[in-house]
Image 1 (cartoon, protein in one colour):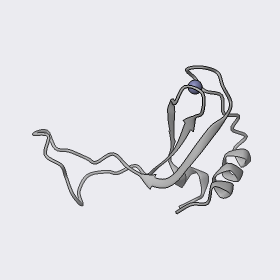
Image 2 (tube, rainbow, N blue to C red):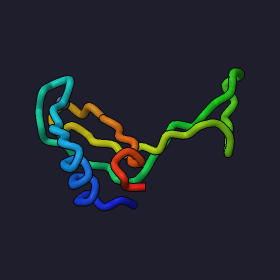
Image 3 (tube, protein in one colour):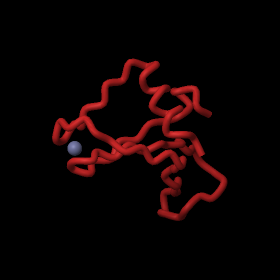
Image 4 (cartoon, rainbow, N blue to C red):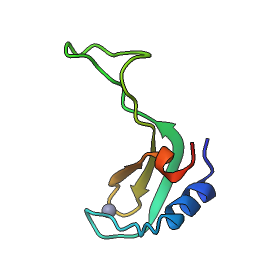
Length: 78
Ligand SMILES: [Zn+2]
């Protein structure tokens, strides 16, 4: 698991200024377990071990609950 401090430092190093696009609040909680959508094929069947996966870290707006997702590979965290 990525540490919250390391994730926040990585965002700062990219000069990210987080503002919720929905409610304009600026207080977020980081969910630093890495998640991913599961790829499916054209029949809707889940593709385990196949397809392209995007690793994601989530930031949740503490006012309205909007969830943002960041690919940690671009933050040099993976
Ligand atoms: Zn919000």
